[in-house]
Image (tube, rainbow, N blue to C red):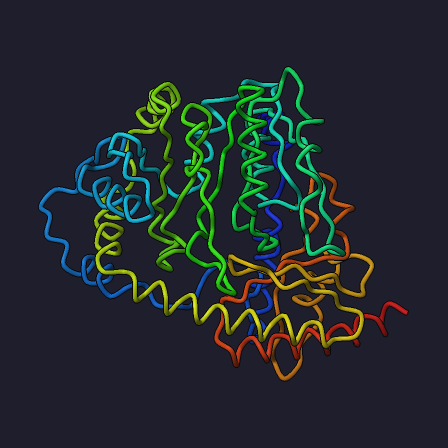
Length: 400
């Protein structure tokens, strides 16, 4: 048998996807599975994007430019100008195969093996995968469900900085918690980054989906970070087009941009057809964004209220994105989530959730928590929570 690398042996499994084999088996048995485990919206992709896909008329599906084709980067530039960043040009963007590749480029550009990145936790689980692949250490800043995952004092970030620190990663609004950073918090992070000459990597893929009249504040709003900021963005959640795999990184730093371009060239090019579709999605999209935000607001309110009505469940109301984290009255949500798919069924239905262990640097911190995405229609969300309530009763009676 061939030997696999230590890197592969230490690569963490995705808490979002690792239970998929169990869901496949459940479906084979005829069980309907309500997927709350993954941020795959059921909302239709914009008609402009779908029409662009249907009417692609190319004789050769050629390579795109490594940095992304000019037409799409022009659309991105126009979009960012509409956000108030009129100093940006098409040269500030590198198009990637999803936001994940943009994160890979950012970490590859900034970090060597043994370097450190500070991340508030819980955090997007694939940050563990990206850092592990490059032998980069995650230094976590903990938050608690008891305070709605509000961050500790910004000074706690500075206390974690060492000579090996290369960046701070934030997700704003946050996956998995829906936490939304305040301007004061971001200003403090900017000051820390400049003081220690490290980079803020700001994952802003859920920018449009912020609720209760609040506004997302981009790290691009801080001019002092011109050489110390990378924004990660993606079309996946903005336009409900996860399968298109188009993301991008934005930076004002020519040094960072040029270094990242070496990785972009090494992987040849981002998806050609995805860029065509994404370019079309940006046309007259304001009404689409507003309607989707309104829909997610309704779904969030419904789901969080229903979850908090279940005895023993704690679920803070998120301010953005389309996830919520709930603490359940079980000892181990990994076992519970697997049990839901292997042994539980009510009227031929069950529900799939994402255990939170993989969203922490120490899995024990998330042992009683799950992440759920409110990306299903209201009636399906109602049914999902009904199933979860019933399953908890059954599971705890079996466990006792």
